[in-house]
Amino acid sequence: MPLIERLAFTGLEYAFAPARAYGMSRGGGFRRQGGLIEVETDQGVRGIGEAFGNPLVTREYFRMLEPMFVGESVFDFDHIEARVRNAMYHLGVGNQLTACLAGINVALHDAIARGFGVRVCDLIGGCGTTRIPAYASTGFFSDDPDRQLGHMLAEAASHPFAGAKIKIGRGIRSDVDRVRQAREVLGPDRLLIVDINGAYTADVALECARAIEPFAIHWIEEPLPPGDLAGYAELRARSPIPIAAGEAHHTVRDFRALIEGRCLDIVQPSIPAAGGLTEARRIATLAQAANLRVAPHVWGGAVGLATACHFIAALPASPHTDHPPYPLMLEYDMSDNRLRTELLKTSLKLEAGHVLLPDGPGLGIELDPAAVDRYRVC
Image 1 (cartoon, rainbow, N blue to C red):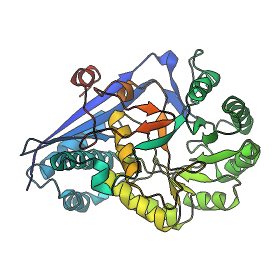
Image 2 (image 1 turned 60 degrees about the vertical axis):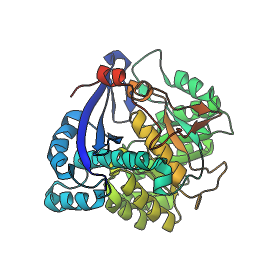
Image 3 (image 1 turned 120 degrees about the horizontal axis):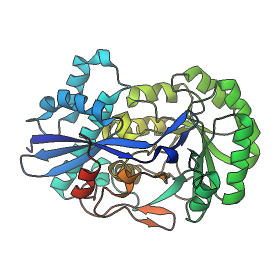
């Protein structure tokens, strides 16, 4: 039985000039942060996972969790997590304890799959595809005069993505202007998604949905703050556009409330924040049972992106179709983020609007040690 011999945490940050800050309706920033968790077994097999959030905070949770995992079986994550939750229930789950557990969970999946010589997707449900349709995540609010909405849309349109997602949420007039510009650049046939990042109340979000409906919006993402479940249910019942959310929700318990409350049309777990692959699979099963679509939120580094590819590849087509206009899509972040573009020895491959599932066992990726050292902060 392989045992966990060692765990290691590496905090990462990519900072750039404040004048080039970009972001969402609630504000922007000029730093991208995250954490990597490495597992090594007593058989010398290693696995890697990504934890979302400020690495200085995650590091402290990691120090608390590390002795609970060392010496245990690589297969015993659920039992160890239960002990952690039972002992620390008063900390809740909407925090970086869950993000740290997510990184450990993915690292263990990577190590187990490598030990068997199979891919992570094979381990968690089988591989339904090796070509994952992607949409461009772009259209940020930006302080950089050389990278405004028009520049970002032109970049997205130059790739054969299924569509693009842009940021809105700074007033109805601004929303309509940005959506109109996006539709003009993308043309009539590509999917157009908008993301409000929880900036509106239910009445304003409904006004927004009605104002942008003529532009054929595929979904509105996070129109309301994550805690406003009653608002989500009311909005979904009245909105002419499908509603998506989940990046700010944690573990299957949060998603159960969203799904059973009929708050959403599209369920968006963020694997490095929601609890890892085990938790994401539980969430997807709930969504499938409720006949809801799944579209994982992907906003982080290269390891998280590769993990999302395996997650999507392992999900059965139901209730999705295998072809446009409603494929199970990958969010492909096109922002300036070197934690996504430089950490791997071989970057994930884009081909004809699809991301190709990495070859090889486990996640199928290898970190570039020099790049990791370049952005290491703890």
